[in-house]
Each structure stands twice: as C-alpha cells, then as structure tokens.
Image 1 (cartoon, one colour):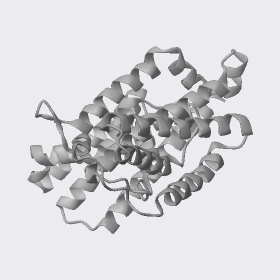
Image 2 (spheres, helix red, strand yellow):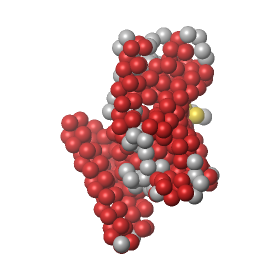
Image 3 (cartoon, helix red, strand yellow):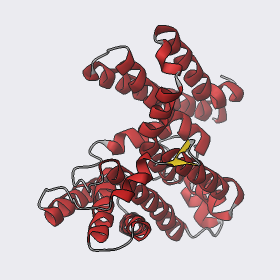
Image 4 (spheres, helix red, strand yellow):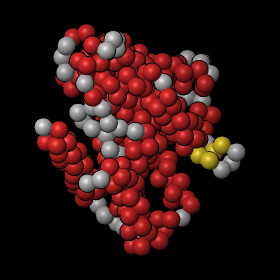
Length: 314
C-alpha cells in the first residue's frame, strides 16, 4: 500500500462513512446534529490528542478515565469552596497534570512497562476519587460553569469545539515544530538510539505524560460542566476510546507514528458511528460490537504494515 493511501485512509474512511449514513438518514447532515457530534466527541478528542504524544513516544496510559474523574472532582470541589469558575478549571488541569507527571515519573524510573504502571494507577485514582466523595456527586457548582460545555463562541461555535481547535493547533505545533516533538518521534522509533544521541528520555517521558494529564483534567472540567456536577464515576471506559481514536487515526501501539489530524479523524469516526447508529435506531449493544470491530481492524492494519516494513528492511 502506498504511503499516500496509508496517510489518507482514515480521512477517506470518515468521508465514506458520513456519506453512507447521510444516504440512509438525511437528518445526519443537519447543522444541529453535526454540532451534537462535535460536542459529544470533544472530550475524547482532547484527551486523545494528549495520548497521541504519549503513544508516539512509545508509551500508553490506561488511567486517563480515572484521572479525568479525579481532576474533574477536584476542580468541582474548589468551585464549591468559592474558587471562581476559571480558577476551578485551572485547578482541574493542574490536578490532571500532576497525576500525569506521577505516571510519567513512575514509567521513567521503575523500568516497568507503561501498561502495568498505568493499569495500577487507574485503580488508585478511581479509588481515590470515590473515597474523596464517598461515591456521591459534587453539587452546588455555579450555573455559569455550564457555559464551558454548552456555550457558544460569538453565538456560533460551540465552546468545546473551540477548545478542540486550540488544543489541536498547540499539540500539532509541539509535535511538528519543536525539539520536544522531534524527540517524541525519536524515542518512539528507537529509545536506545535516542539515548545514545543524547536525548534525555526520562525527562521527556514525564513531560509527555504531564501534558496528557493536563488535557485530561481539562476534559474532566468539560465533562463536569455538562451537568454542572462533579461525577466520581465519570470517564469509565474512556481510556479504551481514547487509545482507539489514536490507533484508528494512524497511530501505532509500537510508537513512532501518529498525528494530531489523524487522531481527530479517529475520534470523529467513532463519534459518527455512534451518532449514525442512534439515528438509524441501532441498539447500543450492536454499536459496541461495531466499534470494537473497527478497533481490531485498525490494530490489525497497523501490525500488518509494521511486519511488511520489517520484512522489506530485512
């Protein structure tokens, strides 16, 4: 398969999927429905863009769903205590970045696979937020907080979509135009070669996980703003959807590959699948089967390409 086809396959798949659903259900292309898709995928997309950096560098984080819940609750508690809305959002992002930094430091220093480290962190953070709240939602937040999830910029652009655009520009700039981004691809492609070249692998890994954590905290604030409550059960199962968005968008579980645009398209493919299935009256159980099948096909394609490349280099 040519590099051109491989690069644009996720985008082509999204266009074909949208066209197919539009033929079966014309309501899909309505402005209101498309705005709904953008809102519904914003949280996953924001987290997935942070996960892109981590996975390009050869890592993974299974705790993002738990981080989202804990950071969102911490921000909510701050607002209940009297902190202004903007301050509460900043606190949620700071809490997320701190948890991400802990994950990165553990991965970098313990010499244990990131899968195991973050799997343990997933349970620790989820248990912590449940203990902190007693399993109850945090209520009494300012009603203005809901603007973060339901408001519009200049009356037109949904605020979550605006945040997605800003984050996309920033992460793309980091990956494409900075030393941090170049090191990200270098570490993911060959970590030992990167070390021999003088790259401070451990420090960079901590930075990538911290960025992911900060974006996850922002996503947690948006999720809390939807219902103007802090939910300790928020984000359950989100880690798989976030990782799937990166992989469907062309990222590799082996590291060294991935892009912001590909990740956005991957998240949109899952969002369009879910939205189209709802419009067509397909049950949520069947939706899970379809999305699971798409994930398996994406990973299989990635593995096929990797083995093909290895055999051609041999």
